[in-house]
Image 1 (cartoon, rainbow, N blue to C red):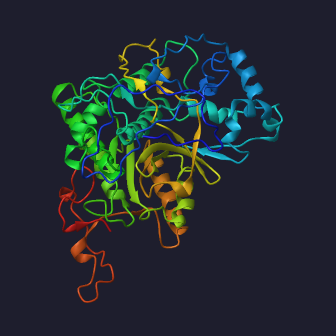
Image 2 (image 1 turned 135 degrees about the vertical axis):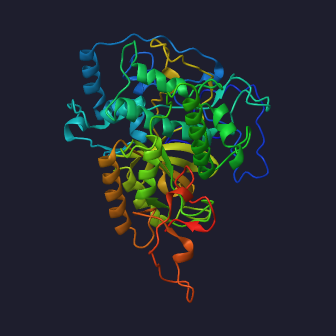
Image 3 (image 1 turned 180 degrees about the horizontal axis):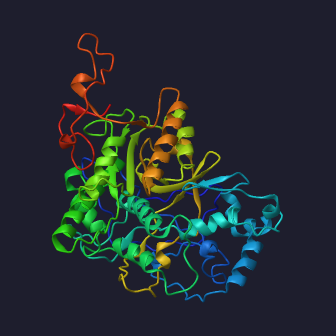
Length: 480
């Protein structure tokens, strides 16, 4: 799989170490195949000087060469503030190569806006909202990549997901951000000193590379068998969302049978417009379905629960329809934004921000050694779960098959999301990304028998007819 290049990036002078395992071939049902090569990321000249939280200035480590990163010491808060003021200058940005991606325009990153102030561009800013603050935020997000050297996946004999697992890894990143937001809040940043927060370490443990870790690649592939997931094969965003739905349902059932401890502390709603999710059309967020899923999560109680919404979309044929690009950009302004599971055709990334006509993303195409962090190891080395290199991609180059994620902490957050989504529909000129309705109606009563037009909307669906995803389980039911 070839990593997507940065805008204006010069070819790397460092040679790649070759992966030990041979590239796996895709199954005959795969729609896309990933490239077999990988690009060596840049290494900043300051990577051996600055320490967390300023690992934003370090390049990605080439773990395919099995190089160990040097141990870094923690700087004081005062030193961190001095460094932040230094890196606000245009000259320092140019030295670090950040200017190749970021411009002076606003950056929208997972629901937060970062503006470059005049003081920052002149080097005198200590702003908490400028581009330096954005880079600190970016480097604190959970970065999950190709791994090698993990336990064999089922009976595949594969101990690496190189060249085929980027969609799985991208989806893990999106879900990991939801868990971080839930446990630690949107304002959380990776601290410069150990011991780390137990919730942070607990989230990383869930995404380890073994069957013992709840949301590992091993368990995702097992849960997604019915949707075409298999070791060595590429899969699309819709199937990936359904695999998460199955895995979380299974995880919850196992927790109920053992100790009742939830690894996934929120309801999950995979939003789709029809029974297979691959026929196009705008998916529909149904408020009643969301309420029912929250009630089910709370074991029948009427109280609202946190909820993760995954919205698979098909926004064109070979290329994304340009009319959808402004709408996609605006979803990053939602406070509930978790970004986009997508990328170039056959090359999945985790798109977490936008600036101008560019998507800013975390790239899973870095090969690292497998890591399993124990949930009680607050001194663990977590450097392989964070990335300092901001990469960008033209929005009109995004694969039209993608999925958007949103996290709503409570009922107020969900209501705010629905309000923003409804406003977005009004701006869509008849072609919304998705719509919001209160209830579901049976498809047999949606259209008049004589001309096939006109929605009756007179009959509501019984929630007993819905499966765990909030979708109708039989073909005769359809979301309006």
